[in-house]
Amino acid sequence: MHDWLANANEISVLHATEKVINLITDQEELISIVTSAIGDGPHNIVVPLERFDPIPESGQRAVSAGNRLQINRFHIEFEPAATWNPRPDWPLIRKLNGRILKAAPHMRAALHAGTPDPGVHELLGRSFSQAENLEDHFVRALAQPASRLVAGFHQADRELSLTAALNLAGLGTGLTPAGDDFLAGAMMACWAGFSPRKTLEFLPAAAEGAGQRTTRLSTAYLRSAAQGEFGQVWHLLLQGLIGGDDRAWQRSLQEILRIGHNSGAYTLTGFVNIVAPAVGRSGMCAFARDSIEVYKIDEPFEFPYNLSQQGKPNGGDSRENRT
View 1 (cartoon, helix red, strand yellow):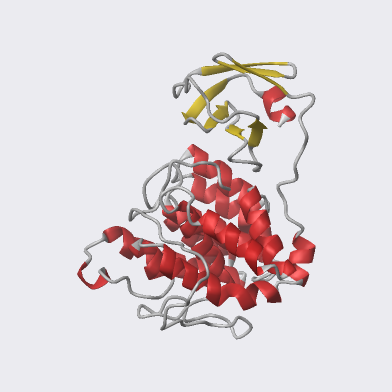
View 2: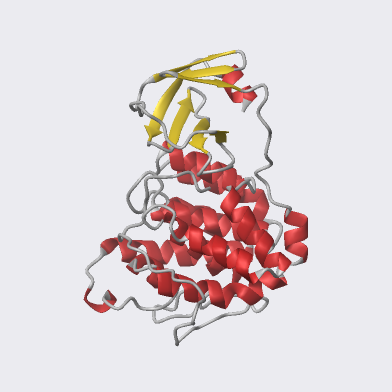
């Protein structure tokens, strides 16, 4: 973070809410000033505030001098700041990833129960209740490249993966479209050991290709995901899963499903579809390799938490910096 600020000639506000101020440098590096409620992330500087007031406007300049960053009346000192590692313990996670696979049907069922978005249901291989009458080009456009991405990652097929990532990029609405969120979640599963290790070598290229067709904010998150860097809530999910702490990972999952309109749900869907591909009415991921279990859930799973939420089709969110 210090290097990004030191090397930046210009810093401006990309997007801001009362909880997040996203800054972008002239080198296209993202710096997110976030409240303690948001917590740690690959780009985040956490400040002990409940909200930002006034909220700076997009395009407004920020000033960096030494260890200080100034935005409006906010002055941030970096010297005493604690550092946080955005990379989970991937070697340990890969060693224990059988526990993640075991929990995959429960995560899939939670997505069915807690997400009304038709795109998520399509990607899970299960028809949304209104899908037969839904003239939604977005859902149709999302399914094919998502399916091909899963195939490409499982087969460590660089060309197939990069083409699929490019076709997913920018699909949906909001600052981080649904196609990008699915791609980020799929990358996380690759880091967790659910694809050949060779796949990790071309994830940065997939992120850069996708960046040609999506938002600047989403590009920054995809670059981080390609390097195995994710936000705190995803760390907690993975730690709970490999630690066998059902309560812990279920609480994290519940929090993930509340991220954005449906951003957390699409990211989790990408993750689950790499971990344990679905077979559904559209044949989603029916090509799964023999080494990967294939799940088809026909009956609702009784999940121990209330996961009901309101959501919008087409994914996207106001980006409360989940990645």
